Image (cartoon, rainbow, N blue to C red; front, side, top):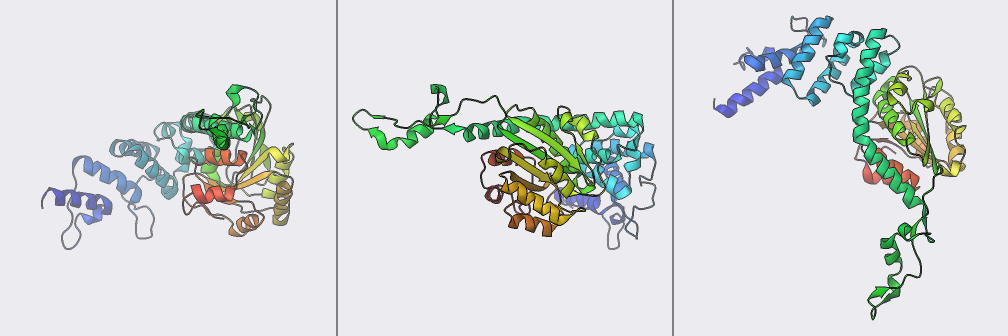
Length: 395
């Protein structure tokens, strides 16, 4: 075989695993060096026995913390960080390694990412104190990285939307004039002999207000399937709460409702105040959130939930209808994550859509623009159709 064929055979051997080495009809051969180490790391996670479970072989991870710790080091040696994160998530799901994440030495070996944070948060009530401190380090690293990526764009989008929403035809200062829109609005007054436009109407922005311009309530379902959404929502909530023009509240719920608004200054502590898993009572959460809204016409209520209601469905829909009738802009996000099309209650999503309440999944990258559209009271359903790819927009 030529070099190209050799590389092709090597890749197939790594994909198919050890059984391909001596397969009937001519196997793909054994691996050596780094390839052998890579193959062993893959086999420990992905080789399955006849029943579809992890293979009972020496390469398996078993339940040994030292062995898992070595494996975590191996995959970081052989694979890029994006692949490492996928393999870690698969190891937790396929081999039930959640128990080992309670051990501090394990937490020091893993590659932090949003999925790992979700797993740690689901375990935080049973963690020993020593492991809890290690878990905080992991969560803090992920949260700070998300804030670094999302903060500037969110603040810029929201500030721009607030400024546009405050447009006026009587700007008080030259600095408040939107010259581009003013010229466009007065083109009919162009004087060719003077080569100029005579503005009969000025378009500009109102003087920047120091008071709150919008109330934002984030109401987050903390059932187990919403783990990534809880992480992203908490980070966005902290960013929005840092803006004086917004009054931001954050509520999490399962069958009970917890108001975490006073922890928005520290999203790490906020996340450790959540309790992933359990039932869901959306109606109760909406009832509590209604009490936080003092200016309905200037309020945005964002429910982040898969809409599987364990409470009183009819009451839930009635409360949403009352909020929209009062002037609150209500948006339902079936997920706020990069995880693809979510599982959700289609019947409840359709009922909300029939009431004019959009329900769709949103990626973290799109959320700042969604907030801008909401502040300007644009048609959110139309915004979702234009900005979200197929499989995200659901109703």
